Image 1 (spheres, rainbow, N blue to C red):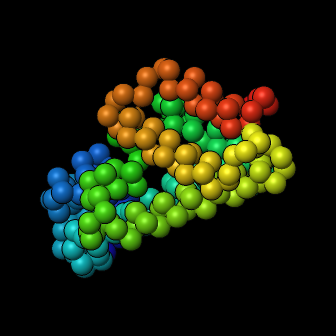
Image 2 (image 1 turned 120 degrees about the horizontal axis):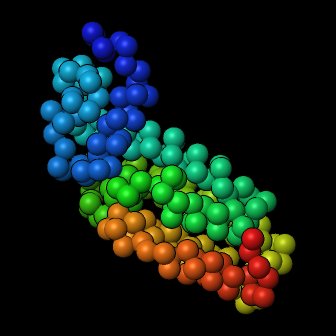
Length: 197
């Protein structure tokens, strides 16, 4: 990247990701990205072509470094609902989750279902979450830990909806202390009489 070789691509994408996460795609200019990354606009254009290219790279980076990492940290296939519950509760931990929310969720809300620069990255991020949630739910279903009568796909849909809703509440500053109690109760209901530690 020309004279900015000191700055690694990971650093550039980390900083670009934070900028887009805080302000959204439309509110961010190339000048903002230049200031945030410490890389001149000409070098950014050379590496990523345009703002769209930077956003696509930042969203892919976010999916790899944040979504995959959080799933690997909390949701192993054998932990089932216990792992998913830890993932949900971690969103309410101020040391784990930024009030600016999740770039994936923010992009989904900003762009909607329209053909947009972030559409592929948003789809891929949701596929990562869906796959992780599905494996965890199916593990507990096969082990007989899901409340009788529940269908795994319906449980996965419910949890995906709850997870994204929680991230929107966090972004809006509306995720109060009662959220943790609600999450614990929801997971307890999924397992019937069993406790989800």
